[in-house]
Length: 620
Image (cartoon, rainbow, N blue to C red; front, side):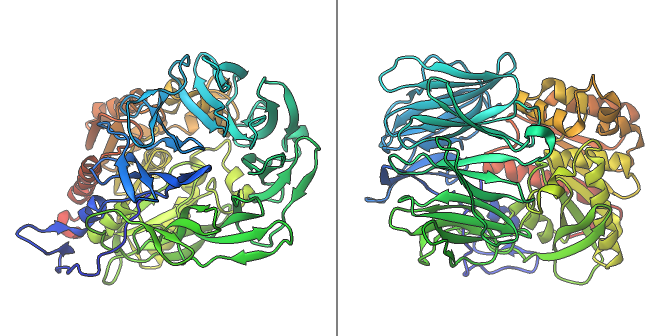
């Protein structure tokens, strides 16, 4: 879920970073979490006045409907641990949402009428599973992707009027629903049957499961180019599929007609990664260009090849959509400016009620020479002169990247007097296929080499105090935190690991099947096949070398970084009598409850300030 709020220029700040305005004062960092947020509204293709968005206005992230014609908004879901996975049927009549148990991501799809009514099973006959895609046709066709330990990935189709769904695809390797054609006759499947979970191939099939065409850039082993299905043409009788490819070292779009085999690569002359989607009338593509941690939008005319830049501010665009009238709506933020849902016409599309989030400080860029090439880091610092106590916050993924985007958690560290450094290590997206694909075999150790290079720069530049460096991150970032304080024990004063991988082999045994496939791709085999690689990349291997005090938080229902493997690591540290604090909460891979998020951030900051050399006085 991405924040979407704007700052209130009327706030007056006191010298300690608090906002005054009553008998009690709430610190700005808390206000950023408490200010209501909204996601980019997604609209029904056949009923564009009907939209669905996510908001935390009640204190928990839930799905909301929005009738644009009347401006009526309604909370559609209400669960203790929140709901963010959902969509609208093309006719706008139904809200679909995924029902799991306390964030465990294992469940079934349900639906309810757009204007309210009881929930009902959306696809009766399908047992609970991990979701692997969903496609809803204009005629009522439903395609559901499921992932289970017993069956691998299966795809099921329920045709209009049918009582039960029919299985049309099954494979042990990971796969997912890619796209459904306008007339619901063709289905694009993203699959990794070749065994490389980092680079999907595409297969187009009919809804009886019979194959139509295959597009596989890994065939022959000479090209490691991933493919993604971005959507069939939104026109009757048009079988072209918009495809993302990496044939030239970065993500670019092409058009592929699986019925004729014709391919048309679209060379747009832009240096970064390109993601595209159709304009509703099929005449153009809306292109999102991501380059050096910032985004911009373009309109690409398919008839004349004209490329027009749309007016968006510098920063990060977390989602965009073209409306039937050609207006483009997008969710934007920067490190300094809280997110807003804007339009290319200049208007604010959707603003939540209540207070607005305070601004933070802008980000600056650092390019550091690393062992695998130049590493891009994003830096925020508090007022005053360095060196500062510095937090290295490491992103998850690993196939993701940090960008010039608003992050309430990072702003909290800055408010407390810390500089914050975020590193787009090898394995990150957004810097070309070679940079992402460099993360193999020496998993974890490669990223830490890049982080160490940026650490050296931060100290040498006078930004960071070498005695007061904090390594932290969530998910894969939490994994790198534990691996880093074990393999680089002299580099870090404190480690804060959020929902981490701690015992890699035990995590593999308990995690989701799709993640097992990714781990085998990264390390070149299973733990039984390449045990030395798994041991070298596992934090628990180095647990006895850890010197820094350690804080760990974990969701007891987490299917991505399961709790058992964390307990294994905790037990080893406890046996040593090592400074350690563990916080377990009743949710999955992170929390959707605002108060829980605030509690966790407060505990992390308190732990760091208590254990940082020099004590709490070493940072505000």
